[in-house]
Image (cartoon, rainbow, N blue to C red; front, side):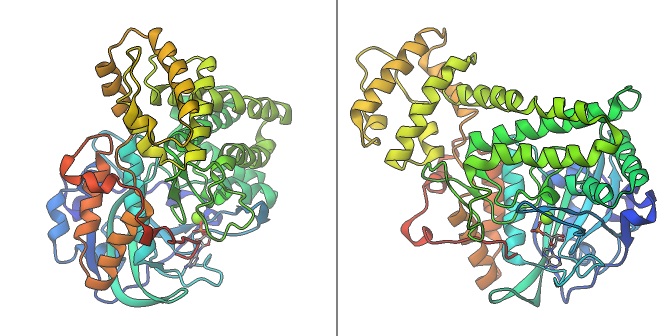
Length: 489
Ligand code: AMP
Ligand code: MG
């Protein structure tokens, strides 16, 4: 394990041609302090966790002091925002410090988010507030705990410097980590500018860096598109299965690695509602929960178009046509798993849909209902009253339970074995908005960050019972029902 000085930087993105990025320096924050440190992420870059107690640790991750070997830059990209192409976006407040090559040869980008203005800031101030930094930090680690591909987060550093949003808040910097921060929009910008050379350079770079098995493949660009499509389709299925809404699925927020990327007004659904819109600013519901799978395809179509100078259009279209089946197959597999079935058949969907519909009508908590379902007793004559009483329409439940019981007969496992299996895929703990809000309020009002750390620990093991944390599994209390999250961050 290394000290900060020993981090093994090897900055490949900085070696790309000038139009790809802008070199710059972070703008210092006044008297930065450490809000939270994530030892699990530190291990990925071989950073010794006791380094976090160094006096200058906060200075380094506020961007006030440059880490030896880092070469800060902001990345260029464009993107479709709410369906409309925006010619130039780019990291308006994020800076890639560089890439760390760890002891097993993996590359990890270290990126400061909220480190001050960049040439791509447009009218923004280059800052991020403590509130949104805590949300990103906790949610990315919660997603990782759930086994869903995501960017990671190393630490949050705060400052009393003021930031103006709907009200005055304070600044923070979250250090984000990913094996690449390249987005769909990173390709779109060169396509729409007609810069085929840069497009090919970027594709070759990403393939060499993140898809090395494709380097010598003849149809490497088509295969690259196919792999991004598979990852994205599977990511969408994972989001749906866990009840996660991203909130701002613009193409500049779509990771080329199929990671959950750029946490803004995201939300985990509580009462099941397919039309759930987590982003208060998304009036049309473009990014509503039930729209996500098709938006995934829409975004991939924008990416495929951007890659057309590198591969035949017909080939791109053929690949896009594969999306529906890949998505459905993975979704059915995940939902069958949530029902505790050991093998997935498309016919099992006949069990999933009516269950979801009953949950919608009864406004049941999506996470907790699946968790409770693990206790379902399959013996004939069992009423499963505790579960049954949750549903408004008991007759509908009984009918569904009979079908479920019949389907379970085809399995060979005991109820106890099934419960153990279900508890490994139906989380007990998710990052409910009110839990995040409680941690944020304590941090903002009392400079008490203990709740951030508590949630980080809790959500790292979302499938474990953790009896002393039982209350954290409860749906939002009344005071929290009105929490609204918007793009403001
Ligand atoms: P987002 O909605 O966070 O994905 O951001 C969309 C675009 O706006 C990206 O180019 C961001 O870098 C930029 N942006 C967001 N907030 C700020 C800010 N406070 N200052 C500068 N740029 C920002
Ligand atoms: Mg973004």
